[in-house]
Length: 340
Image 1 (tube, rainbow, N blue to C red):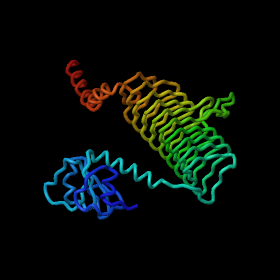
Image 2 (cartoon, rainbow, N blue to C red; image 1 turned 90 degrees about the vertical axis):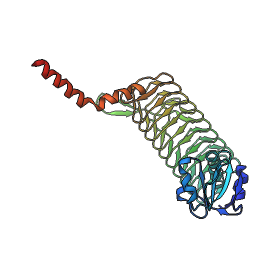
Image 3 (cartoon, rainbow, N blue to C red; image 1 turned 60 degrees about the vertical axis):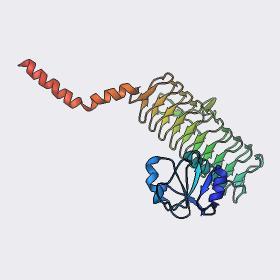
Image 4 (cartoon, rainbow, N blue to C red; image 1 turned 135 degrees about the horizontal axis):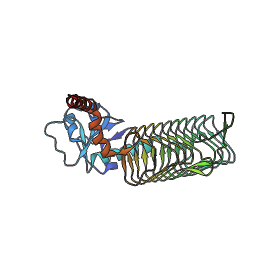
């Protein structure tokens, strides 16, 4: 896709300084900009790059005044970072504005879809699937029986949405994610073997949820595994059966949440966090990367370590951890003096 500086300025309600008809067809970092690319300057520490960048167009704050000659065309806006993000969103919408059905595909006769529907090649849509307007299902994706997809749901290539799953408006399922596979349910037998417990529940994603690539969300044993409105999951996360995650909670990559745990709203959970099952985590909790959570957590706690302790206590203790060999040597020296 090709845009001129004047077209971009119109989208962003900005002002062009330079060649308004210069065209761009790709995005770039300011330090890596080249002819035909669009970039932005928001962080002052990158200002030197604006004088050397080869990008054709650069978005800047309206109060930016060059101190020497520049070659790039400027688009001045109120907030360069926000405007560039808005442009990325617009670009993504244009890029993903696919409609129609490619071939070959399978879609059951009992399934329905609204306007603006797209179904990529080799995709499968099972029986009694209900799909709203502007649903996009990319090549090699799988949608099982009795699934509900509300308006503006996007399922990228290779993702799988298993039977009975319900997905709300504006949700995004990234490539390779699996939503609604069986939970890890097994009962020990007297002979030491394990018998599989049927997983008869489902998964519910409320509106505006995003599921990262390679992430797995297990169906409930009974009832539902639920991700509330606005939850954002990074890549390669495991959400076990009957977990519930509150509104607008975000979780970083490689975190695992065991079965039946309830996580509150507006939480921020770092990468590689491990959370045991059958506990409750309150609202507005922050958990640092690589923390192990083995107990229920109150609202507004900030945690780090394994087992997790208060974040400030952890930092204070870490000073002593690093000095521990020195402290031991001092104790040994004191012990020798006392014995003498």
